[in-house]
Picture: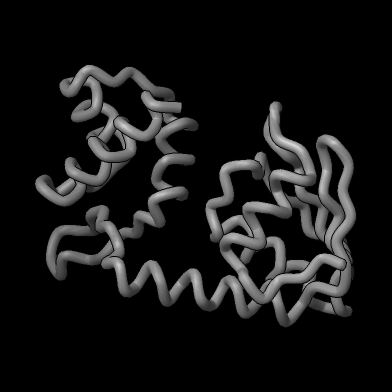
Length: 158
């Protein structure tokens, strides 16, 4: 875990100090810093950091890190989407099932993804009113609920 945290700091610093226009370029810069990662790992890192691309107005796009205020605003929207859509939550050792109001499963799954909870391996939105959340190895439903309560103080799973 420590290596990941350090790598995320390096990724943020590289994006802030260089004009990086592709994952290939970022992978090269990371290699120069002593980090050997796969493209899939880098994609997850970029998603976790909420990295976006912005147009430079002439030659193309480059990566950017959202400001702290933009990140907090995005998180507030995710929390609102979750609270607006969930009906109930149940879990076992490896899976969390969130029942939603009709039509809210997609936005609720996206909200969970955007919160960047460490326990979450991934989400699957059901057709209309359920979200399945796969948990990482070593995580369980109790730790997920605890992390969710830390992000969303108004959340009451009972």
